[in-house]
Amino acid sequence: MAEQTPHTGVIIPAAGSGSRMGAAVPKQFLCLADEPILVHTVRAFLRSDAVATVVVVVPPPHEEQTRQLLARHLAAGQLARLVFTIGGATRQESVRAGLAALPGGIDIVLVHDGARPLVTGEVIQRSIAGVREHGAVIAAVPVKDTLKQVDGAGRIVRTVDREGLWQAQTPQAARRDLLERAHALAEAAGFTGTDEASLLEHAGIAVYVAEGDEGNIKITRPGDMALAAGLLRGEGSMKIGHGFDAHRLVEGRALVLGGVRIDFDRGLLGHSDADVLTHALIDAILGAAGAGDIGSHFPDSDQRYQNISSIRLLEETVALAGQRGLRLANGDMTILCQQPRLAPHLAAMRDNLALACRVAPDRINIKATTTEQMGYTGRGEGIAAHAVVLLQPVTTIPEAPCR
Ligand code: MG
Image (cartoon, rainbow, N blue to C red; front, top):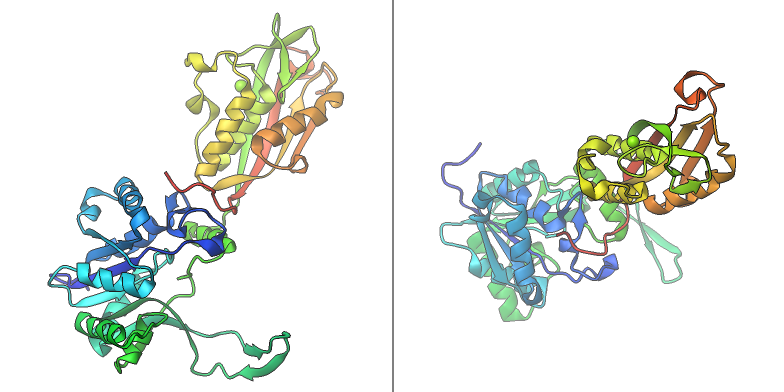
């Protein structure tokens, strides 16, 4: 049920060095399914009608970068509900800075990790409802797995009873006055808590659990990126694609297949180098990525592509699939060619295509067949090629932040 006047403010402490991710940039800037993690996180809250303001707390060196990033990815109407403020050295100081930056009229505050981009509208709603009922709640899920306490040598000391044990997530939410009081008391006492709940508990304020979500993961380690990307896409992530191409054999042209120049008295006619095998592979990748076809990306009418090596076009295609979070899992191709004999060249073609696709050669398979003198390939009028590919989600951590 949407409110008439939203009274909820969200604080997102977006600091964190990302050291556990092995990345050079704070993890909230890393690209997840085409967008920075922080953009996914902020947008999840801006989708809620109950949220009036989202305060993004950033460490000083990244203030401008964060502003620009969010401005690039969010709509103007969404940006109007954002407030930026400078954070402190610790999460606790950053949240305190966020509290100070909240506008008046806000009486419910949700604090949420910048690196938890998969928070759902339902979890946000339950957090707000929980504050109305109890004053302070945190999103949490019951512990499912058996817990073992082990000693320094890795030997199990005892089995911990998981009855009544919950894993804390965020949002951690409270009435604004309670959270402000908890922070003031912690500061006065020199108490440092690991989360908002621990500050509230320290202040003697009862905190309840609101049902979280198993998918509301915090991106901490490199493997979390692949998991989060898969959850964000919300679908089976393998993509299949097919490509077919044919070119006419003419005199006075070089024969290039899979980037290999082959000694022959004729070559393939086309605007580019007419590398029919590479064209079929490009179309298969574009097909799997849901990105149209070779003609729409590299039109014949464009002078840039005249006589260009099709391997360059393949590299661009692979980059485009990468922007969509996909990389080649494997590709299988068949060349239909009566003459010349291609068997001696297949390994070199495979190596060229694998290099352009940035995969190991064993992920590429190329076969050649004649058509027993039947049809246009059999009569030597042209050469044709089929390609089938499987694309998989990119699972490596991008070294550069999202643009
Ligand atoms: Mg072609």
